[in-house]
Image 1 (cartoon, rainbow, N blue to C red):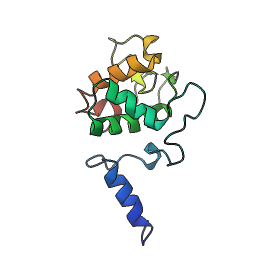
Image 2: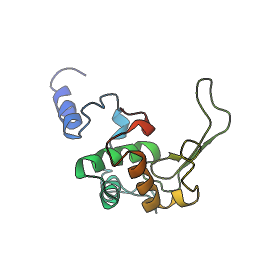
Image 3: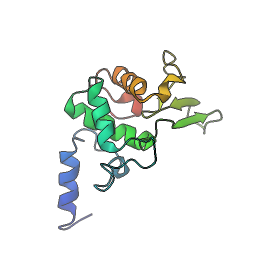
Image 4: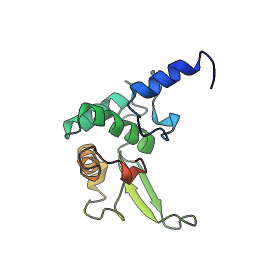
Length: 141
C-alpha cells in the first residue's frame, strides 16, 4: 500500500511490537471492533488473551505478541484443535490443541485434554516460548 493510507498501517504494525517479526500476517491483528469482543460464547477476546498471557508470566510486551499468536492460531477458541494425520509433502503430522495450538507430537509433555483449559494452554505457551523470548514453536523468529 502506498500513499497517505500506508502510514497508519505502518504505525499500527510498529506500535503492535512486531519488530523483527515483520513476516507476521495482517490477519494476526484483530480489528479494533474485535479487540474487546469474543467471537462466540466461551471464546476469549483479544484483550482477554493479553490478560491471560500476562497472568501466567508474560511481560506486557511479550503478552501482546503471545495474544497475537493465539489470535492467529485459534481466534480465541479454547477448544480449537488441528489434527493432521496425512500432511502435505514437506510437513509433519500434528495434534495441536487450545488457544496457542500446542502440538503434542512436538511437545509430548503436555496433556491433550488439559490443553483445552485456557490457563494450562497459556502456561504451556509461556514454557514453549521460553518465557516470551522465543517464538520459534510458532514459526516466528
